[in-house]
Length: 143
Image 1 (tube, helix red, strand yellow):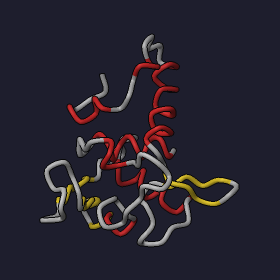
Image 2 (spheres, one colour):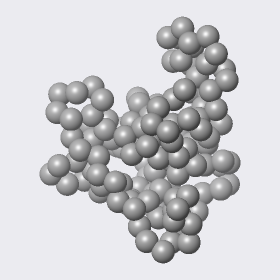
Image 3 (cartoon, rainbow, N blue to C red):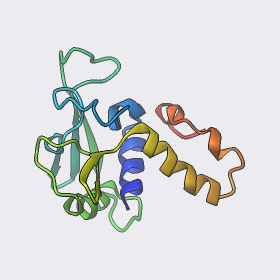
């Protein structure tokens, strides 16, 4: 279920991978990376607030992306978020994407995300799934 949420939040706003996950477990900075408090629910869906993007590197403004409800759709980012969020114990200052494990919660890294995403690509018969690096999402789709 976690992979679905990562993918939905990543594809719907067409964000760069660096805005969603981290390069290493030690690279989290709550001043510029997504935290739990950066996702707010309202009657229409979710608002995701980015503090740092390729074009907003010094916190000069915030970028708000609405993720609308898609009722009765298995691709609804709101219902996916609502199902996933209670599964990982967090605080408002925690990184938005954490993995629960035997040693507690750890950050979702780019390496782990790309590795997890390659599995369904291979299962779907994509012959060159191993070459997927994650950069192509920012153009609107994985290539």
